[in-house]
Image (cartoon, one colour):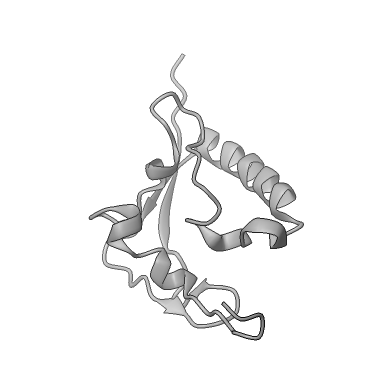
Length: 114
């Protein structure tokens, strides 16, 4: 590849490729990122490009992942979050991928049993 060549790829399209993610690539399945042992599943950065890859990896990646984990722990421990059936999941085209209609979810507090 010549140094002046522009290479453009669509992260949205890559996130929906059956060849990368399997037949259920269009389904909302957070468990696909978690191993049976409960640990985070390793996915190479060239397969999931949210933070770029190689020598140009996002400088804020580690901080972002730490914040995401802290928020997830706080929410998962207290609430059950379930996507609202029938709500349209449509991307909004922009530099940062947003959901055009937001993410409607049903949030229920866990009942603690003693």
